[in-house]
Amino acid sequence: MHRCVALVLILLAAPLAAEPLDLASDEFPIGMYSVDSEGAMVQVKEMGVGYVHTYGMGNDASDEGIADDLAYMDLAEKHGLKVMVYLNGRKWVAEHGLAEMHKIVLALKDHPALGFWLFYDEPAGKLTHAQLLPFYWLIKYETPNVPVAIVEAWTKEWWKTAEVCDILQLDHYPVHAEPFPTAPLGNVTEFVGRAVALESTPIMPVLQCMNWKVMADYMKSKGIDPEQCRYPSAAELHYWSYSSLAQGTRGLFWWSYYRSIQGGYGWINSTFKEAMGEVREFADLVAPAHKPEIFEFARDEDVHIAIWERPTGKYMVLANGQAIARTISRGTEGRLADGTGLEPWGHTRDAGATVADGRITVAAEPWETFVWKLSEPAE
Image 1: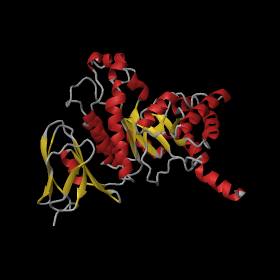
Image 2: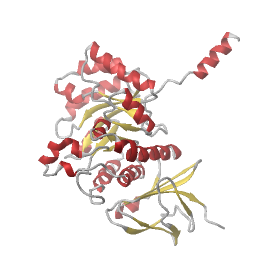
Image 3: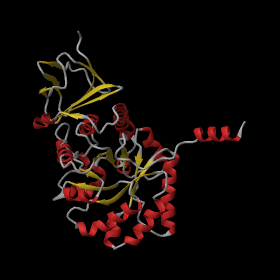
Image 4: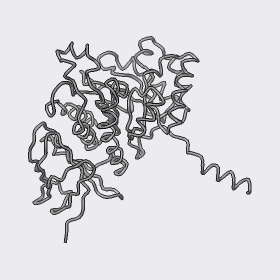
């Protein structure tokens, strides 16, 4: 075989080098915190997770510490995963460790598993912009094309952090000991909605993948019996995921793998795996998933509705954002013709939803999410 032809065949057969997350691309990241081992990587990859993280990174700027960080990234690359690289800004900002963070960034920035940087965990109320900016500028100087994320809880002036990051992650985990459907799931969608309304920084919610029972002392400090705490149900996972998609979020992350398995592997290998596999399939089906047509006025009644019209078909999500069963009847905002077909997709039950007189009507259970493939009205 001619050497040039052989070289071309080798190049075609070789896997393409991974690239960091391009916020202008169609990619929709689904990631998980605290995926600390190779076995965990294999497990979450099968669930549809494409981005992994560990708090073990970014803590040590010595050659040995950086070697450990690179070893983690090597494992992620081996399994076709990208890494949300934790830079532990809390440590380095407190220690004025600009040079140390610089060393870590320089060592990791060209690794093919680099997805994006996670700079700081919940700085709101603790730090000023003047303290954060030198570190953010340093990261952007060295890696202008790699996004920098900060994660925030729902605290006072959380939104100010959006000015010193490229991705704003939001963490809120409301399922404690309340029986379904009484947990305040709507706190998540309200938080996400407020952040999306900023229209400045892409939003990635960090959703609950754990049972608060494993943090017993914290629950007791809140007056909650940890023995009564539970994992989120499938309906709750679907509601959070699809209502986030329907608000135009730029990805989904889950906290956390490590916490989820402290109560055993049963829940994550069944309820979570099934729900997450479906969400991954849907996000790929409607790519770019973060660019739906959003029914803006539906939010006024705690309903989240969006449409994705793609070569794969036309799809619609409707999520009941209340803890009660109710008949939802909303104007179609000119996007659906009367008689449009609503074919249930994924987990969606056939609830007899209709489009008539310019309205879509469906009887929804508490927090119920519907995903439909739309078809043109019959002639």
